Image (cartoon, rainbow, N blue to C red; front, side, top):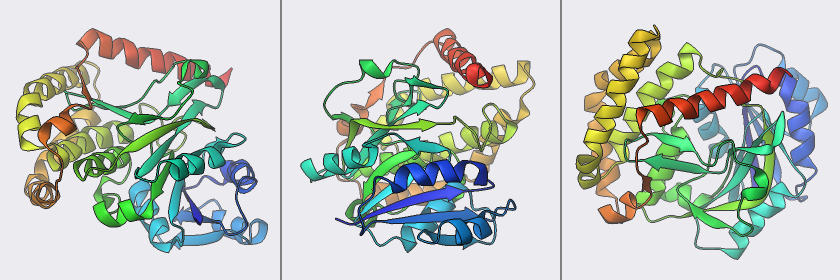
Length: 333
């Protein structure tokens, strides 16, 4: 099976050499690398044309975000297997073969999730796939855990994090590409949920590791990230949650948002509020998209609901966020 590696970049030339050298060393002669340049102004396109002539460049005239950039790369790709790799993620030895082997040994799955570790702390997991809770919050799985605590064999997870995700083309042909209007953040969650609704499964490949510079592009805690997370959270929920599951989980979702809005007001973070208002403005469009997605659903409510973890208390949620901030604060050391 031919493999296409798709790397989306926006003013990320400083990361690309390390990223490309690491992944190119693990590919077969028939495989390809596609770099989608999202309208960068740092000379990425010219540098690639000179330094990486074997790389296929898809140069976009403007920044379409991660979702739009990925879709452009997926449309250009020729492979049966499609590997998404962040431009600030650097595969460790045997990462790509481990992902491909997981697909080969399990031909029924639609995706394989790799393990992202923190670049400054490669002993700790940044994301080992995606998990979700009944309050609609989608999170990176096992963040902060020691890599040695991961299981030895592949195991089912809700979905793959878009920073290191291997997809089968036949799955994407079935469920569609990423939702371009998401721009950045949670587009991989929306895709994972749509895959679940169609009966596709995902396995974590625990030995496929890549070191990742966390939020190098969007900026951890930036107003842009806060707005897009608040908006895309509800976009994904409205589009993907089956009606029965949505009805059962709605009290938890509203409780979480009440807490988030109170926190945003107290800490003066208006972007968190603006994102949620933006999602409400998109209501009619989202409902139409929901009807199309739910009309093609092939799994019962309980199959989707089984992947949802119980919600945390507000204090547990806040503590988890502060632990991540403390971990990221060590980046400069």
